Image 1 (cartoon, rainbow, N blue to C red):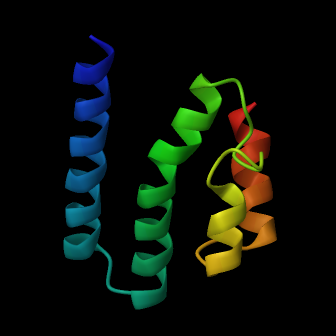
Image 2 (image 1 turned 135 degrees about the vertical axis):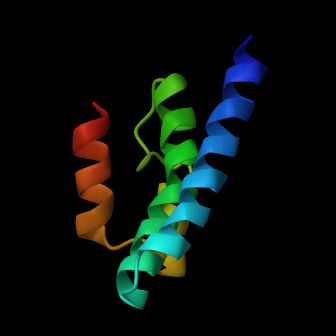
Length: 82
């Protein structure tokens, strides 16, 4: 059941990302939205493990290093995820 739900979540993220490309005109908004679509499953995984996305065992620090997320964005995600 968990794999089925995880697959549905992944498919929904892909679907909503495709819709964003159709509906949004601002390239910066599209990039930001797509980044959050990518990060959402990782944040869910961290939450299910009882961790924050900022934990060294999760992907948050790598998202910061790669520039996908700013400290402020990561802070908002972590704050709303608890």
